[in-house]
Image (cartoon, rainbow, N blue to C red; front, side, top):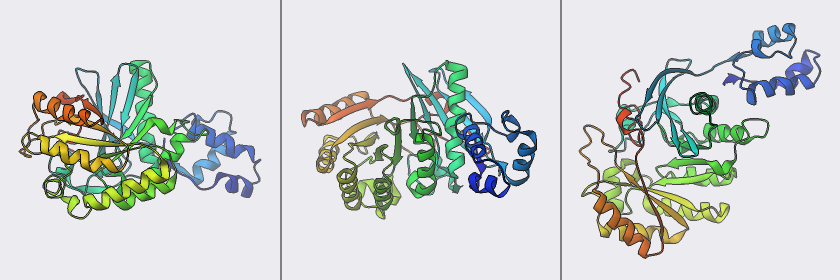
Length: 341
């Protein structure tokens, strides 16, 4: 669901309609996810025509679906201006996760990521971010007979370069009068924009923050993530400390394991030193092949040794397995095969 909305209360007041009409219309939009005023069966037809004359919906459409052998589904969304971007529905046991996008393309150009090869088109609006979850939840209920259990803002784009719109969408997901999703089930993943992290902490949305670190060496991180030259590890560390002080929430550190790049025990030692300043959970992530990057996946042995070193330092570590790699829906692969984007 998406649409341009003014204040319905003022609108109905100006047109001498009873105040409860505002609540009815908002319930249709945010709780029942109506995609037109015609669907609002308890609203008089004359009022629906009036609303049609003053407001309009901008719903996303699903243009393409690709299903993986592991039941992961990649979705190509089509916006009203014909821009395309991707999301992923990921079932795993009792959990069903929606991985959604915050931008069309991405301006950061991370060297390992297919989305970065596209360049940047535009930020998504809050209703476009919100609507991805509504459509993926509908898919989950139709195809899997389950509702979404989790949302991860880990798709195309850097959410903290579009944090105002992202936070608007989060607030509406969590609103009891909206989708009523617990903020504890929402994770936002950032490459590490220090000022964006501080703004997110100040927004008090109480979601989970994940940081795509990939190296705790400033020089090495710059070769993987060019934006790290501007957003340094020192500035990132200070922002994460401030985030923890304000929110008291443990931070997830995402670490993509790249063969002979960042997978040595010395790399693990540097990662442990970086993570001492605030409570963390570390996810070691398998690299998913992207053509023309030159990177390869670390061996299982290297990943296990890396994890074992960190665990000996009493750090919480998980090795995260890829999902949807066969349809280019895994981490870092979005937009790899969508030639229209």
